[in-house]
Length: 106
Figure 1 (cartoon, rainbow, N blue to C red):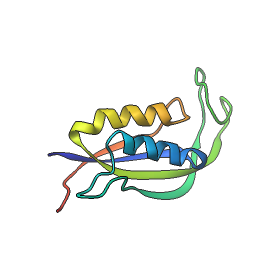
Figure 2: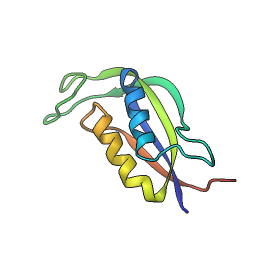
Figure 3: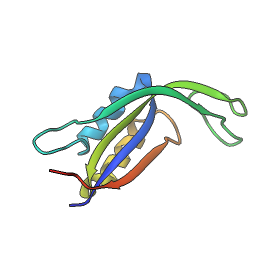
Figure 4: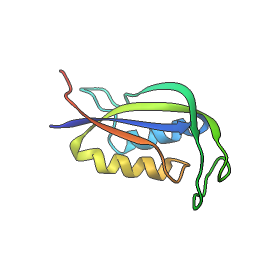
């Protein structure tokens, strides 16, 4: 079955909620393991434009936020549910989500 790596950036305070939602939706399953993920911390930067409703920051001003980059894997049949779960748990109106096709080596 085709698999994907999903990467999402989230404020540190919301990392556990987003990771948990991803796992509940079926992400992070490798062999006999569940809830597999990798996290690295960094600084996210963005400038909300007119029409945005930012959770953090102010329209027109550059904002820097301590964030986590969460990486996990997902089977193709779970992808839509995982993306929906990320958006439901994520505090931003426009979360940054990357999806990469991968081959799992077993």
